[in-house]
Image: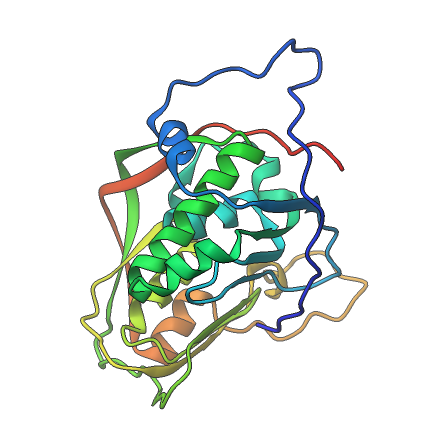
Length: 281
């Protein structure tokens, strides 16, 4: 996805309680307590972001650096990143948590950056995620808990004629996801991020059961439901109707040799108990 820097903003004001309330409610939840004990950003700014049509969302984080920036991201997307939880498994969030987008710019002091440099990359990334969790608890008053629910799911499996994962990818790693395409490059377990991206389109958790490993250039394109041609006998349309292309299910089998099998199983989910819109600057 294209990236565009944003300037470091002034420290964000403390959140105001809900209108008409004397004070914000207190939730004795472990997620709030754990977040309060995590290392925190020294300065952080959060603003409502009004995106241009078809504008992408971005999250920037640097190895061994506490600087965290995001643009055109929803609270759901921030929770997804901070808690390593697919968006389809984030439940009971308020409607605005997915519809309202924000820009975020947060930074800790240089002494903490030095601590990150003395960690492994995995430990540093885990610390960065804890800091964002603490930021969400502080600024969005986010309270969550984990549980396991029995839910309808899809299994991503190899189709009858075998997989067609694409050309091997020599290096780099990116994911692009538009309204009618998914492009994944350079991930060593390419089918796993594909399963996660597919879950955003089909509305269910998708578990990778392909057994595919290796770095591939994976491309999938389909025709969204709202662009398909109307059924025979439908009322005349004032606009020309494009040829109907494959659904995401058909495209997956034709282009990648994979398919989605309906199933049901235990799914770990993150339940949002409470969240508030941040107050304006």
